[in-house]
Length: 291
Image (tube, rainbow, N blue to C red; front, side):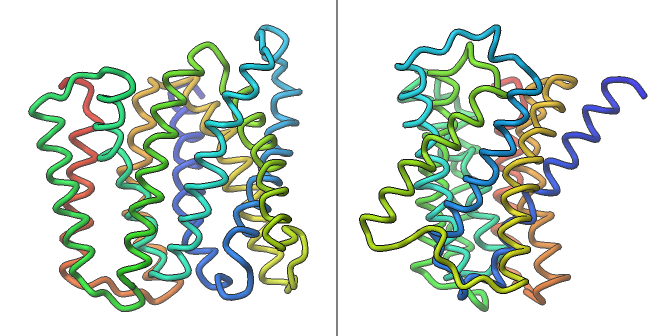
């Protein structure tokens, strides 16, 4: 089996796991605080990735300073502490497919964040792509699909906006740090910060009324979605062009919607499907190399 085929296998595994997080956490959203769910997911995932880092041994070739750790932790907090916590809140207030579509729309916001922080040029194609994406989000907002709420949709959009900042800052500040080193640091150190934040708010992250189903969901999202999926992502990117990563945003909302229909019985209305199609078109325009 050649490297390219292996790369696609790794990457398709990644996309599948990423596409399941909203679907598997939706049924237990009433059994656990969304902040606890996010903490446990990234804490477990961080431990898995720490072992991956030790096995890969790329840290031996990488010079990491205290300042680097602080920067990586701050950037990682945008993802694991803020954006993904807001996503879990959105999951509890909307359908699983809607939450997945909203977080997958982040390339629309990356266009503007990259223009501000990376001085990337705003071209007509990028602006058109963003406009199509905004129309898609607007269609979802006015669709009034079953299980959705305006508050949940707005929180989901906010999660997507913050994730776009995370994406841009990763590109700006961590160019010379391998993914196998960046990921565990960006998960574990923010988890420590998150732990103390939750404790100060009177929430013990580990004090959960564990049922068998809830424990399975926590372990699945921690080990597979946040641990193994990132490992397969890094292994896939090594064998394929890095731009292939854009396709995760293209396929995730589609796969998540299909899974939510099959396993949760969420039937999207025509307006929601229209909004999904617009967002996929928008991401497809963003994913193409030439602007």
